[in-house]
Length: 319
Image 1 (cartoon, rainbow, N blue to C red):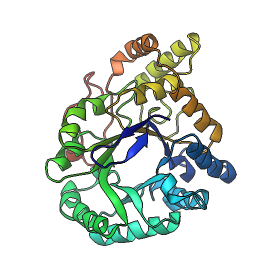
Image 2: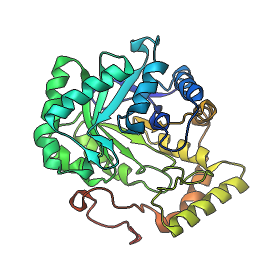
Image 3: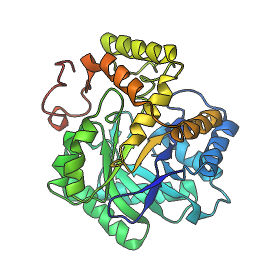
């Protein structure tokens, strides 16, 4: 699988990385054997950066990864997890919890170091704490060798510039913002590159919105967004293409994105995504689909504290 450099870290990531949120049953109940096999299949296919969080399944994802990675040489894969978010409404970015969280994650996954650690969904808290307490605590842990590179993740675009204007970061991870429907993260690339930050994208399907699968009950898409995405999916079907294929290919086509994180507890899905990644992108079909989605281009929703959200609504005026 094609690989790209991650900012100034010296790491090279596969263009498709394995996201382990599904191992935490965030989308459906999973079969444990299938879940464990999906990790090994991803590694065999070259998707050897794994992204997880203690939030996914409230520790379940990390624990299952510990089983899945048992016996796998540590130098054959790159591993990233997060900290700070532990339940739907439970956040703790204190220095004390930072140290505890790193140690718990290492124990769950049976490893002695993490390649990447991210502050998870920082838009839900006063971000001054991230700059003044959380990141300094992580830098001290970085010096101990337990973590190699430090960054942040979240939904609003505002959070990345706000933090980087005050503190250096090694990497950032955004989700749902570089897809067929929303390319706001792409607009931020020049600024991120000027800061020397490694750029990671996630969720090319926007939580199934750009697939033929049923949306999870917690999905925030409006009726208009759902309708237009269904029209786009049907248009792809008439052209003999699964919209999910186009979504994956589009999200990895931008060379500025070191990787796109996508995950499943179904090994067949992982195999299919890797196959799609090797196929040429149909640029004409992309143009047709994006024309259908134009009325909802860059539609997004509010997440976290109001002051941490993007200051302007989507161009369509819908939020």
